[in-house]
Amino acid sequence: MESLSQRVNALSPSATIAMNQRSRDLRAKGVDVINMGVGEPDFNTPDHIKEAAKKAIDDNFSFYPPVAGYPDLKKAIVSKFKRENDLDFTPEQILVSSGAKHSLANALMAIIDKGDEVIIPAPYWVSYLELVKLCEGKPVVIEAKFENDFKITPAQLQNAITPKTKAFMICSPSNPSGAVYSKDELKAFAGILLKHERIITLSDEIYEHINFVGRHESLAQFPALKERVVVINGVSKAYAMTGWRIGYMGAPLWITKACDKLQGQMTTGACTIAQKAAVAALTMEQQCVEDMREAFYRRKVLMVKLVRDIEGLKVYDPEGSFYVFPLVTYYLGKSVNGRTINNTTDLCLYLLEEAHISTVPGEAFGDPDCIRISFANSDENLIEAMRRMKEALGRMK
Image (tube, rainbow, N blue to C red):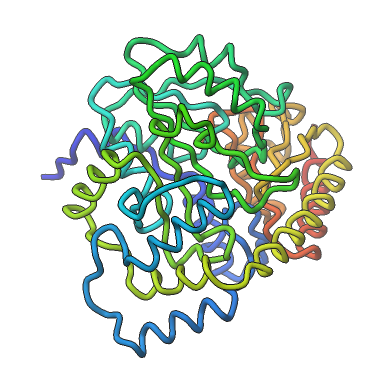
């Protein structure tokens, strides 16, 4: 008899992973699918990072690591926070995990009890709501619409806070919208959050280095708030290391200790070889990061131009990350070949099956008016994908 837990039954599958799998299935059948749905750089991991991993294998780093991470990696993370963000952490405040998603899960499980409310701006990354649900918390979603550049206002944040609010989640630069909060905007949030000692902010900064508008800003920079902020980051996006699975947090000591205890029972330490590769990523030359950022910026300019050339689509010019999140309401309710496009899931399936382009429906991100398109792909593929999209959408009536 099959009897799954309510916890698992309440969980929604990841839409990004599901669309990626559909793309793989079609490609396995010989279909030329251009994948615009995947959330990872299309670059290879830089050679000096791979060499560090090879050396770690030869040096027999094949035994259990400390739960919280190797001391040299934690030291490298402390130095990164100081050098790039002017944030002071001790090694004891750092916890290395198997990806930034793992770090987020650790933090939520450490602080959220049944019924605790977690404020989440939408559009949000697909896993935020599901992780809160796993912790039996209650997601409180604030809509940040296209018209406001996908940013919430201080008034919206203030109005969402109740006596049950335990956490506030923010992602800047944002997945999926590419919105980036300025220092002044974050300062306004900090002024509100400071009045509520119970609220912990989880600041997802994994797209920090894919920023097209200048210096990265973090809510942790405000001294009075720092002891209530968990900074989540990792090496996946900046160093093209998605498969290496190294994320980390810098947090108040009491939260780091709790997450250490939790991780010790769940997964123990992150992969030893990947940790040594991450040391090289954080401590050696950083030109590779800037080279990739420049490539993403060039592609962003191209992508915005191509999307704006398609009738009915409206697009916010992203200030960071490697996604555009165009408004597609013009096409919802239209029909093609006897099928009606009722929502963005229908639209993305149509684009996959008919134009052989993989995108992700906005419903998965809490915004049913948009779709997410990744421009982490070659210029040639971006041009061809948008040609196919324009042609496929043009057939709808």
